[in-house]
Length: 242
Image 1 (cartoon, rainbow, N blue to C red):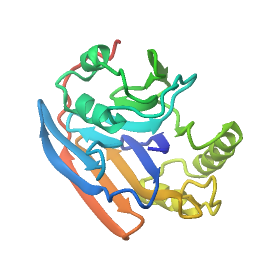
Image 2: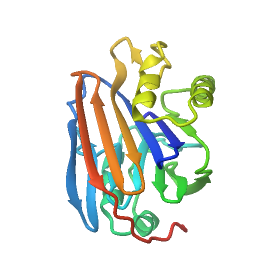
Image 3: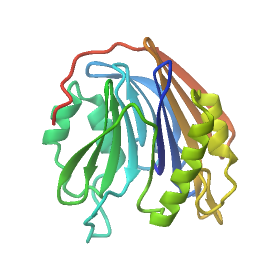
Image 4: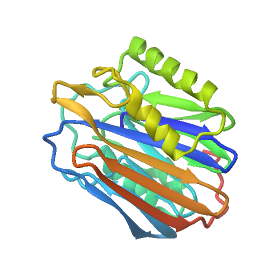
């Protein structure tokens, strides 16, 4: 929800999502495999709003949520619909891109959705007034930090940490990425952060997609629980033009 990485590897792609949230929030449910309209899904479930912040479709589509968007307009202080429910709706659709075109986001707080759909990587964002789509280079590693928690200086610092690690690890896997995400000791701006127990990193999700397989690893940092779910990759053709 608050830190996202994307890394192309020799085997496929590797994505991560670190969720920064109040430790007092109702506990999230571990990821499960569920049926979608046109395949299967894996995602954890927010214990409060029943949405999700990261999920993968058996077609290989991955969606990862970040709170906030560039040039956000959020004059209201409360919103009637959870951003996590939007992620579930998009993931569950048999055509993710048509769903994005028509979905009503009134009364949804600004957000950015990092989407991988082979062979494309892009950001879908809602700034409170308009939807946007920005394509990213899928041949390069990327990192995103939530604009609601990390200012420009913090984002630059985190990008430098990530870039330095990428330069030393030419073909990382989920284990080495997990170790990197856990190694930063900056309590305020680290990849695993803890701001005096009012806000902290609650979980790390790692998604590896190869030519034929999807591995979803989930680490609950409060309980020390780890879950691993796998499913076969069943790609389907879907236009990525929005």
